[in-house]
Image: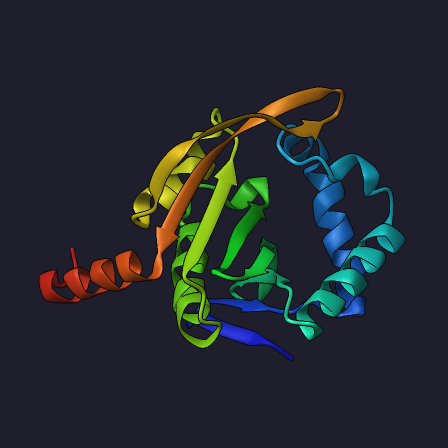
Length: 191
């Protein structure tokens, strides 16, 4: 099983079928909050929908086409971070994430994505990583901004959520940019 320790209190791990009930409960508890930003929420009507999603995610992981991992803080799931839209040439992928409303504002997603980048640029050999988020979602946009991604523009009406088309702000980070930022951070020391 894939487990990526990020800190003593934070890790990403591939979910198992047995996680479906707990994950569904998290989604259902935050349904109204998540529905505003994520098109898949309305189609998630019970644990069986989550189980089907998890099976598809595990198949993507097995075939090297990405994955969805539980974000666990202090041993409990608080959200998910996924690697999607994997393309072979040039090697690239997109990161997506969501977190329980009660755990927002703690920097957990930023720490998770920062911890995932060495795996994506190193072990997985990606040249480019992208994050897309709603232009109006300041918290979601803050993640790539903090991590040195470049805002490359806004795609108009590229995602359907509910009965409306939505825009997406696109942020990109290249492997060389990530390396340069990491090296610069090591030279400057902790803030």
